[in-house]
Image (tube, rainbow, N blue to C red; front, side):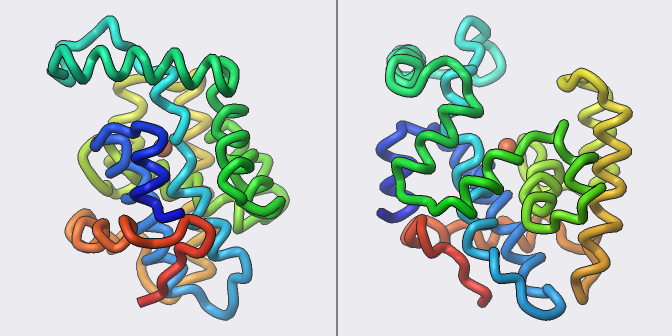
Length: 215
Ligand SMILES: [Fe+2]
């Protein structure tokens, strides 16, 4: 199944598709500069492209002022939320994992996806788990409208206080950046919005089980 077919099947709105594709493109840019082999690259990209696939179940649909959705889109998202919860249960993280299994992701990809919670970052760093750290780091670098530097993103995160312990998350994010930098030949801070935006289209026809494209 191609990535556009997956997003279509799960009714993913455009902004959320773009978010997951940006995370995938950032991971691809990083993996393209990886020193030596990274055997889990396909699994990492799969995780990036699917990590928020069940997110519509936790959309706050009562507040429509920010997104200015049409009444038809609003209605569609209400139905989608209901369908996701009825089919996969109300736990978004577990639902994401269930969907990835249904799509045929192997146990290695499922492991990386199961670890993909920002709160896990400290523990993953303690055991040098590069495959699981990379998708979380990439997710951290993608703001609502594109890739940011880690400092910009953390500033945004702390000011919005959307996580329980933003200072701890920020510290883990900085450690993750130093950790990932040690594996690659280019400056992580130099991978910016423009480079990532120009590569989003590549994902639409890519196969979800073999998405990695080093070009
Ligand atoms: Fe995300």
